[in-house]
Each structure stands twice: as structure tokens, then as C-alpha cells.
Length: 402
Image 1 (cartoon, rainbow, N blue to C red):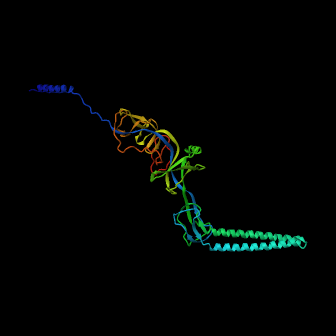
Image 2: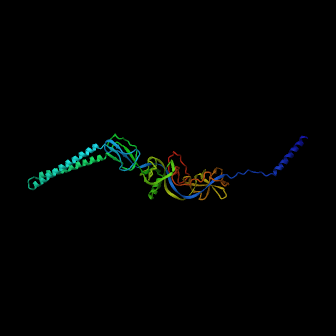
Image 3: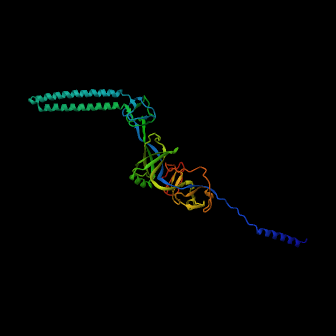
């Protein structure tokens, strides 16, 4: 076979193969709907609040300082014990002061005797003056002696009262109900009057919580405080589920220079002594209650170039991308001010595989229903508008984000 014949055969085979291919349909691979979990938007009343970091302060703090000097002879309490008002704590050697009381009593008796003698002399001279047996000058002299004796009695009585008071200062009692700190002196030590601090007592019931608000938030806090009592919720970082509440009771008179913050204070009953002076605590100042707010899990929210958005599912499981406006965080939930209504199904996990208008496959959540609790303060920052972002554990609280 020559070369020309070979090319004819090859072209014939190629034409036959091409003809067979024209009639075969082409198959395209279809992508299955991505699996997602969904959450239903709920509607309920939630608080509007300011989150801050505060610290606890004893409602009363007393430094016990002796009012007389002397040697400590008794200590009648244990370090760290709860003491009651009037409970005897220390005894200073009373013997020098008992001696001064006796001396002052003797001086009073001596002054009374001098007064009685002066009174008798004055009465006798009055009788003599009545029969012209004494002069007016003599009568005036005796009257002055009586007045002097009366004054001496008063002076000595005052000395006696002072001596008795100093003697009572030898027995040091607790001026308040509270917790005793560690003693600063032991029995046998000599203390000086009004100089040596020997014990500190702090009252734990009630307990104060000090924190600050920004001068931006202060006008609203002051306005609402004037209209009624604001509630303050307090938790410790180690146990955020244990919430203690009390009223806002104090607003400072001026803004702190350089900081732009105002000190405020809440009062907690602290009946079980759960909180201790000096603790750092998470504080939530509740301003008002938002009625019928729409909430979804914060995990549902996504951030795009145009701002936050979520995927909302239609009845036929098609995803629609919706821009939203977020309010304050409420635990694991977040308030949606615009973009979602109660009852909407919102994609919670699997958003990266979802496209707007595309079908999705709804699967059960692995970790169950998210926490929808809105009560109690959290360590997360929040705002009246915009996305709320949890701060670092060591970052100071700055109130509400705008």
C-alpha cells in the first residue's frame, strides 16, 4: 500500500470516530447542597446595660487606735474573727488610771468640804451684817469665797470625769459589726495614745462595689438614676453564673481628670459574705429593658465588606444573605435591631460553603441548642449599636461600644 492509501484509511477512521462522538450527551458533575445547622430567631425582653470592671469595698472600715497609752494586758478575739459592736477586744493596764480616778475623787471631796465651809462662813456673816456687826466689804469677800469654792468643785468634778473616761478607754471594744483583721500588737507591748494602730475591722454587710462609667454614658446614667433606682448585677470571674444584685446608690460629684470617667457605687446586701473587700468583679449596670427584642446566636453572624450579615433560609431551604444591624450581646445571643424577624431560620454553622440563593442541607446541631440566657453580667464588651466583640481577658472594660 502506498502512502496515499494509508492517509485515506487514517482519515476514514477519524471521521468515523468523530461521527460517533457527536451523538453522545455530555455529563456535568453537580455539587450537593452544603450541610448547615440553623437556629430560629426568638423574641423576648432583654436588658440594655453597661459592662464594667469594678472592685468591692467594705461599707465601713475602722482602724482601732488606743486613746490612752499603756501596756496591753489582754486580747480577747481571734485574728480574722467576726466581731460585733461593743465586743471587748483589748485591755490596757488599767491600774494607773484607776489610781487617777481615786485621786480625782479625793480632790472632789476636798473641794466639797471647802465649799461647805465657805457657805457656813457666808451665812454667819450675813447674820452679823443684818445687825450691822459686819461691813459690806466683809460680806462681799465671803460671797466671793463661796463662788470660788463652787468653781473648785466643778473643776475637780471635771477632772474626775476625765479620769473615769480615761479608765474606760483601757477597755477597747469594737465600734462596729464586722470582720477583724490580723492584730498589729501582742499582749505585753506598750502602746501610745492616738498613735499606735492595733487592729483593723471591716464591715462586710452590706458591701460596696466601686466602678466607673465614661463621661459619654454619664448623662444617661444620671437621668435614669434620677427617675428611679438602677440595678447593678455583679459576678466574680471565677463563677460567672453566680449573680448578686443591688441598687446603684452613689454617683461621684466630678469626672476624673485625664480619665474622662466618673466613679459610681452600688450597695449589695452580701448576707452570706460571698463577696470580700478588695475583689475585682464584673459589673453590669442595667439601664432599661428592651421589649420584644429579636435575638439569634452570635455564632450566626458574619462580617463582610458591607458590614455584618446572616444567611436566612426560605421554606424551600434556599439561603438568602441579609445585612443586619446588631445590638448588645446577651450571653451567647445577640440582639438584631434590623434584618431578621422572630421565627426566621438563620444559618448557624457551615456558612463558608453557603452561597446566596443556593440550596442547603439542614442537619441537627452537634452541641445542642445554644445558651439563650440573657440574665447576669458577662465579661464581654457590648454596645447599643454595632457589633459587640469580646475583649481580651486582661483588657480594661470600656462600657458600651458604639
